[in-house]
Length: 425
Image 1 (cartoon, one colour):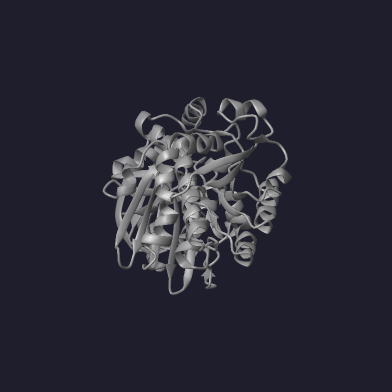
Image 2: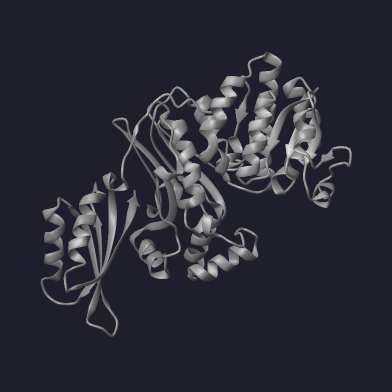
């Protein structure tokens, strides 16, 4: 028998507890040992009892877990940073293996945690920290570990994907779509981490670290959210054959990395364009396996519990085989992080301009001077005023060149407004 402790009995913690109980016979057959939940740390007694936790299993003092030599695995699913970090560090120092679903912890404190785990020769597993029930970390570290990766392009936040889906399907505003998400429990009371892109940024930092064997942090990720997306943006994308998605991207070339989270135009023919509602997906470009997309529920009680319990079972195997010491990340390289302006991509440039002769020629000249080649142009009048809406799709170019051209164009008297979207074909 292998005994574990669960820290936190909220949505995920309760799901982990229930899944272990529900599938206990199959888990025992697959690991050769029964997994027993000995302790559940939860300050809200009623919440734990509602999940089925017994009074004997319930505890409210972390020391009760740390001092119990029979507990070999500590499962952290309470979230947050400070207390969760303290608990995990103390558990590792006590020689206990760790499973966590805490993306904030791995993105911010992962380096310290993995260093200590290596010293103490314990496992640290964190599959559920990215993508909920999607086994992307396990796939990258195991089945696909012989590959090198050039690109990770992902939809990693269900809240924002739901909002953009409803804006597209129903033609509603960002504000109304956010309210729908909140009413259904998909958006927090304070949704800023989701809608401003921070949640996805933490996740892509983790995936970038795994893919490129070089430590990537939240501060390395260029981040834009979806709060400025309006109905006209959605309509334009659809007219051009695209969907707007909040893409988390990690790209590597010549030992240099670019990390970003930003709204982008995704061509309808791309697999990511069909990822809707609260679903997540990770599109991997590999040198041997070619292109692979993993798709599924990125959050929720049971999808996340599935990944957590999978990690618990993997550690059980390590314990039985006396091979613990799988400490999560092996960042043996130090690659340069590039500014987002170094990104090469196709872009959609939207301008509101004076509706008069030679304006398009002037814009084309400014772009051409900086090596930005135009692929297509759509011009339409703005009703009731002497202005036109100009949409330009570029060939692949460095973002720096396009931004330089936009800075010049914004100073022109005939340009009222300009913004850009990255395009993914």
